[in-house]
Image (cartoon, rainbow, N blue to C red; front, side):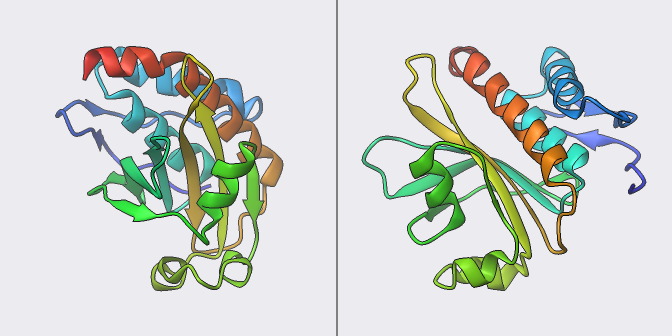
Length: 182
């Protein structure tokens, strides 16, 4: 397990000490952590992305926003090695994100660059493994997705699936609140 950083800083200036990681029930613990940070004032999408990054022990994590008819997704929270970084939009055709968004179920890809050779960003970033899941809004329409990526193999697929599935449920439930606050 990696050492936790000293202090996490969210975009609105909220500073929080990282949690102690659980020994089991990862999904439940992840939702409790993200909810606690959200209740303390961290933006929902950042609380979820940071929780996914820490609990899945991955280099990158992100929450995207999707609008019907778009060929792009907009990252609304991006964490790089436990630090928030600048978000951007990208074409999701021929990416693992497309697979997750189209199938609207959990997706896990080992050696992701081999599975998606047209996704140059995966090669540029040095991504080895990818996991993600789409989430819906209160009308059960596609709203976006949560993903984690790592530059090394991810060995605990069931743990990662539990965390991502639980956090996408939280995003589904809290998505209307997020839009009311923004």
